[in-house]
Length: 280
Length: 337
Image (cartoon, rainbow over all chains, first blue to last red):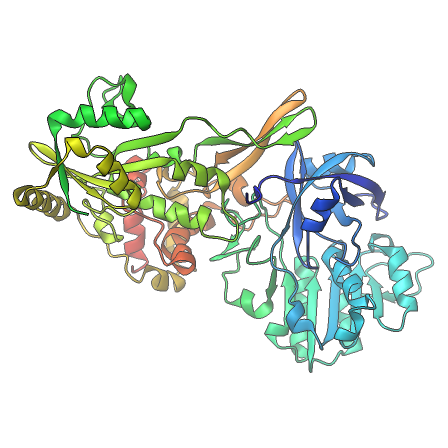
């Protein structure tokens, strides 16, 4: 019998830690209770899942781990509403349901062989982390050209995955630039908005694809910068957020025009979005 | 499949045969004198002269509240399927039967099938009854249907003077008719002609609304001032979508009592501000303007783009029952459809 799409996989929180100085973003390492479920849950970076807490409901979150990290899923969640507040209060070992994977991932077929420009802002770095880990895997790294990552946050303490960012900055197969709006003591890297840094780096747009995730205002200006750098609208890849319930295109609330963010997205090219109403 | 007839005097025997196979619902007057679908065992006499039910029969397929999961002491379980067997809906109007084809697109045509809808759809047989006297707000003939349209039903019935003309629309309908073969006669040419006249006369009573090209025309009307005006009138009460046979949007919430509870699906409505409100406070449809636009765009443009089908069957319920007299026909006319 086909699996009931509303029935979550049984899983538990293996480990949880605070990601930022504001202490409102937590990362959760989630492990399936049944290894067969772990095998059945086969995701591609860019996709999301619905986390489920009986009595509290469900909410969609981008999957921050790569498929190469086979023993767990990673979610980084900002405390915002009822569900996320409850989630933040849970201890390791707590049961949690997972539905998914859902949605259209980053366009990996089109990314193959291209130079990649990944631009992130604030806590919208989760599925970008999944993409970077996937690309950096030795089995995959040769499939792509250069990898430029520009990541900005308001302050150094608001950058996610800081230990990992530091490791990546030591490597020569990824060119990672960090920037903050406001430096603190000890910050020796860039200060300023992502777009200024991007424009000073001047990545070539030929044979390149850019993925942009961040707050709306950052996305708006980053698109302008990328277009000025010569990127085609189809080569600017964005990921949207929307209130969701079912996650499978039925409950009817996450549409932008005729497209449902849950199943036709959340990843869209700038060109695709331009054909849709600006209702997001 | 040829048309059959059954004498009105044999209708009770026909329904008794169906009762042996499952639960039968028939049109009958309630205490307030309003005709609605009621379980046949509790009904003294079947009503045949009614316009349409106030509530569409969509609740038989998409209940207003439906348990998706049960929570029990930390376990998460699928609810046991209801053991009611087959349901027979006798007397559904053609517009409401046609609406099932729209719901099928949503719940059965995608990558995922909705198992709850699927089970109810598979276990429910629809016997539609052609309309003799449409209401002023009916416009089924403009949206692909008609008072004698059999689409979405298993059997289409036409009430004639002495008998009912029956025509199977699906293999399941054929099976049903052959199971009550003893009660049926081959329809006489006069009966077929009488039915055709009855349907034609009903068609003539319906005022057409132009909706062809609606998807194309609405594509140009996203920024029309009409949405602002409609939004100023709309109360956001949701009556239109609760009564609409094709509206299917739903919410999912959890209900707990102690350590047991359920995850329940409930009808929702795009007219409500919370429908699209993000946890951050951002709302992509912040006012009634955007929400009314969504309602019309979804039915007359987005559904056409996704399924090549209007998500309106012209039943007119939203027009008849709106507390502030909103009329989507007027809005469609204004945007040039």
